[in-house]
Image (cartoon, rainbow, N blue to C red):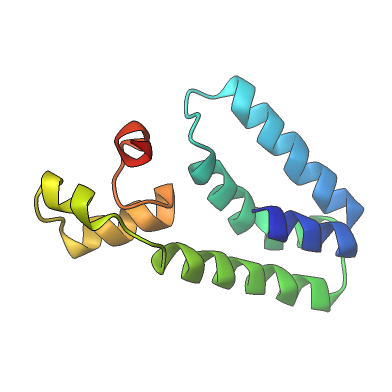
Length: 114
């Protein structure tokens, strides 16, 4: 997320501020406090922000590149084999979903951190 925001700061200060404001509002106004979920949502909204602010086509393509990189990074993340072994066998679709949405192999953040 930081790399995406840093890149957007170079291309558009307006989008950078918009992302920061949304992230701040989300943290304090929503019941979902998991930053991985909201950072994914903000990254997925980047092309929309580019259209709203009527920026150049290169920035629009860059925003899709960021989305692709974030998805690839999340899918290829490290896993804790001993944790997955203690929880039983995960369905591959559950694993893909948890990695994309929560950026980890399981939904429970506290169990993942321990």
